[in-house]
Amino acid sequence: MTETNQQAAAEVRKPRQKVEVGEVVSTKMEKTIVVQVIRKKAHPLYQRVVANKKKFYAHDEESVARTGDVVRIEETRPLSKLKRWKLAEVVRKAPILAASKSAPKAAAK
Image: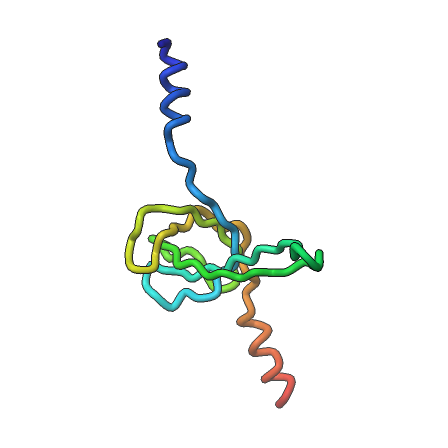
């Protein structure tokens, strides 16, 4: 076998990691985020679009993600009882709402 064939064979043997994209719904734990993934699928009988929600616990080493961010997570070895995913990247940051929360209080006075 040539060197390129060996590399190609090694890449084929690697198992593919599952990847999901979802919204962060909780960051209350240390180095852990809760990501909600929504999958939309046509109902087999009624052909209506049905949304299925599932929550995943993911490892966030640097605590980069915040609530409301859209993130990409990938499957990894079991890290704890519930954590089997890790944060791959933050796809889109959530808008900062601190300024808008203080504005209604000032308007009410």
